[in-house]
Image 1 (cartoon, rainbow, N blue to C red):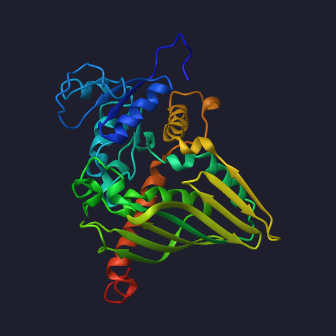
Image 2: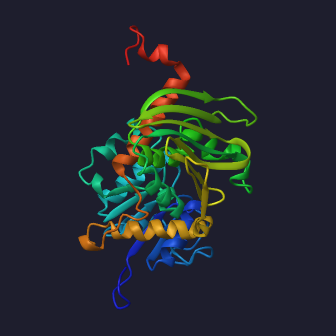
Length: 345
């Protein structure tokens, strides 16, 4: 972080929805000079302070020029992520942090993948910033005989944004919403814990109690090195359940994201449980990610860069989206259609 005498780092947040404003608030809390550039005209005066975050407001007449040499956060709808990230890079942004997923599909990210400054792009992955995740990662690293894992993120979509009709949100749109895109964080952290995946099977739930076209549920099965992993993602469960259970010859590990606990059961049945209260405060978690992201800036001295809570690389973000693409195709057409002689994989 800059010293008290140094000018504050400039951060420009593109998008003023709930996640954009959270980013703006959190980056101000960690000492950045933050501007908020809405996509939609909210009738707000250019240069005024946003009431919710205190960030200075920009409009289309001042926003593009503000991107040069700035740390830019792209927090717009998924369909805009690639275009907004490219605009920031071409304008000379020092670094770009894109909200998940980095693109609706891996193919849609081609232009960004080909950009000569793609290494300046990172992807938000706040679950990596949880203290519980970091503790679980250390424990999984000791399971040298591998095992099986069940990852889950199940909730009720109408509860996500109670002040808005969920059917009008991007989550409901088949081309940029659905659980595979909305809950891609689970796929990201599972690959960090268990290794790069090879998809074995997948099924999509396109019907259900929600009146939306996007998938309401998905179940994935993959192998990754020493671990077999199943993942269940859905919008149709109450109450919310989120976390992972790892079973192995060396005991059972359980991370409950909702309760912010990690439990370890030994082969002999002894249990220990640790509670990570900070993980219950989303601003604290995102603040950890924000500080780690600032330390990853190209201008930061190498000895000041930190991995604790750092966001995902662009390559990691694309890999997670590609697995979602494969699962969607697998679940929609079935394994025979994908790998048959008439339709070679």
